[in-house]
Image (cartoon, rainbow, N blue to C red; front, side, top):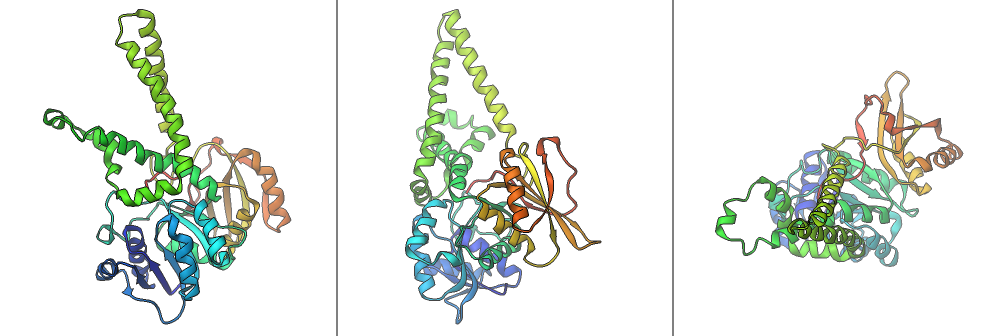
Length: 386
């Protein structure tokens, strides 16, 4: 990759541009707010203005609801050979692209990284290092576009995760969007906090409300684009909150029986919280527990991994983690795909039909395995905020 364009020079767009420029890619910066583009350029993110010829790939760093329209406009102007958005919701943009633009040169993307700050001045080239970067190819997405998207991710130091768009939206509703709403709800309680209480605020409170400082306009767009999925998670949370309120009211009574029942519910909630917390990797790159591994041997030639991932995407099976162990002696690699246990047999059979060399007999991931000597290529559930 030698050239790229970034449309939208906020935090994410400018961070992508900085990362690509640092690796020698010539980046062109476009933004309706020319001052933002000039600021990004002054940081070393690239040059302001359209390229003279189509670039290899254009990154659309715009709100989810604008992806389809912006893509159609830029495709009509011949900005790039391939396009990838970085919006935090995927189902809506995919439908908009199908209606307004050419889906063959487009792939959905979502880097699971961000800060509570916004704008180009908050950008950093290291923002995506070690972070998950979701790709949501469709049957229309060309292999060349997928390859270019994978190269962008590699240049940014991120970890590719291939997912279905709707599965992605449900996942981020739980691990990213709802946490932001909950943080905002808690932070809103502090608007009229007495000065005495302010002095008592510690790290626990700061941890809970940290992400509540995000740009309200941006988060309004995000929640609008993923409203139903977030509402579903909040409804479940509301049920638990209702039980917790009743239990705590019971603990405040003099009735022994009511207090005992209340304590039982409180203990159950706290216990489930501890168990849920264990599901989140302690650090980026840590593997998920559960599922089973499908193992595929690939050659060590350019594009082989991208071709395998494209085949997997065509199968419609969600892959939660991908690792590769290189074998320099015979110029090959062993790719391990972590999928739901119920999907392994069908996936092995279909991959064999497509001509891939599969080591049949999936391995339960819960049994553990030695860490591969190659680098981690994809991790499981996103653990970072948008």
